[in-house]
Each structure stands twice: as C-alpha cells, then as structure tokens.
Image (tube, rainbow, N blue to C red; front, side):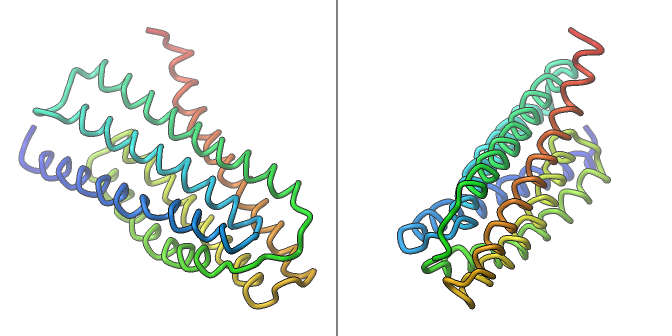
Amino acid sequence: MNTEEKNNVSSGKRTLLWSVIMSAPGPLVVGLGLLVGKSNTQLADFVRRSAELLGIIAAYAVYLMTNKNGGCEAEKKEKLERISNIFVGLMMCLGGTIMFILALRSTSSEGGNVIPGLSIAILGVIANSIFWIKYTKLNRAEPNAILRVQARLYRAKTFVDSCVTIALLSVAILPGTDFAFYMDKIGSAIVAIYLAWSGIKTLWERIAPARKNPS
C-alpha cells in the first residue's frame, strides 16, 4: 500500500468514525422528543435513525478490519464488505418498512412539541450533505464497497431529513390542523419509500453477484 492509498484509508477511517459520533445523538434526542411530541414523522424518524446508526457502526467496524495492518486477503475483504453492506441495506429496509406502517396507522392530528425532532432534522440536512460529498470523493479517489454504500446511505439521509424537516415544520407552525396531519403522513410515507428503495438497491447489488458466483 503506497502513501496515497494509506492517506485515503486514514481519511476513510476518520470519516466513518465521525459518522458514528455525529449519528449517535440523533436517536437519543429524537427519542426524548417523543416524550413531549406525538408526531408520526418524529416517531418514524426515531426508528429510522436507530436502524441507520447500527448500519454505520457495522460499516465502521468492517472497514477497520479490512484495512488493518495494510489490509486483509481479497476474498476475506470482499466477504466482510458484502456482509456489512447487506446489513446496512437491511437496516434501511427495516427503517423504511416500520416508518411506512406507522404512517398508515396514524390517526391523530395533534403533533405536540416537535421542536427536538425538527432541530435534529435541520442539522441532519447540513451534516449528511457534507458526509455524502465526502464519501463520494473518497470512493472516487479509492473505490471501496463500504465507502460507496455509505455515500448512498448519506444521500438517502440527506433527502430523508429534508422531507422530515418540511413535515415537522408544518406540524410546528400549524399544529392540530388537517394540513399538518396530512403533511406529517405524506412526509413519513415519502421517507419510508425512499429509504426502503435505497436499502433494496443496496441488497440487490450485494446479493446478486454472490448468487451468480457462489464461493
């Protein structure tokens, strides 16, 4: 491994570590916000953030293992990366499915205090956009399955947080109204579908090659 490759690996490790650090408070803050708010989007967002955090932690752990002491054998690296990315895809699908179910079951038009969730969503748009750009650049400089899937995950997270921000903003400005109720349902449904679609795409890319070339 030359100097440039080592620098790219080090940058990848730092970026993944910061992803874990920046994502960790999200489920906690949104979860605490559920104690004072009843927004369907906020509840779905808590589930989504929790699932994504598990996926990011798994990706970080695998990236460390596959790049420890100059890296591991190609076959072992590919297997670990496939497992990690399948797990990330499953977490995305799980989050999207649960969010969609919650959106369908929601019947209350009272959103309560959604400020905690709204604050996290706004910060998420900013932070996730930065990570999306960073992972994309890293993957272009040194193609890597983990970094490629993380770039896709953060692209999805950026879009999702944008939808969540709009939905929760409508609940905060017009609480208890039909407009806020439908924006809340529509927001969580859009988030769920996009997240599940991204997860399915990730799973298909990792499972299909394995089925064609079983080891």
